[in-house]
Amino acid sequence: MFTVPNELIDKWYQRDPDAFVETLLKEVRERHPTYTQTDNMLRDSIRVGIERARSNGLETDAQLSDFVMIMFEIAPNFDQQKDIRRQLDDASIPVAERWERLFTSDFDAAWAEADAPSFFDVNAWYTKPPKDLSEIETPTEWDWAEWLATYRIQEQTPPWEPVRDPNSEEILHALRDIRARLESSKT
Image 1 (cartoon, rainbow, N blue to C red):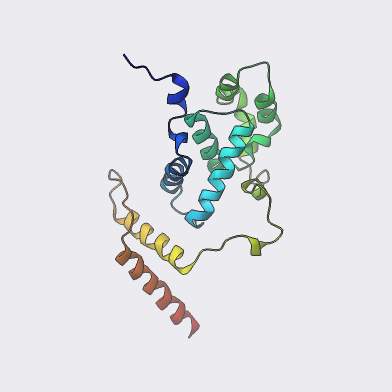
Image 2: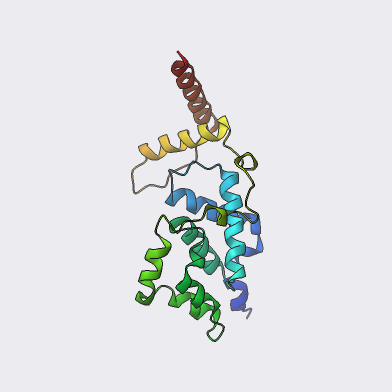
């Protein structure tokens, strides 16, 4: 009988890094449908998150995924909150146990501090923070149209059904609507 070792199962999705990023992108879009960043911007943020998770000793698909989602939910620099940082750095405890302990009530105050707007550091989304805003990719018209089409679909989809991706005709329709709105605002 063939048995798959646990370490392979724990890192199953990471075998294809691009597909892993796409899976996380879809989850980010589902949890945060109002994000205006382009998919490429979010992919870059997810890649940074995966590297941050690994730099904290996390290795499994679940750990990396959870770390990235927490970056989006709480703050991209949540791992720098002093109590969370101390826990992640505690080499006397196995990494998996350190990570799990963060989700006990002992860390409620730490999570509240990490979730405070004053704690948020946008530079944590970058491997090398941009010198100025011109280095940050801005959404194209197509990106905005894709977002608008997705939003429209989401608004029409019952909560119990999955939201489908827009087709090219829906995106083109949204693009025409955006252009028409921009033209009407000029007059």
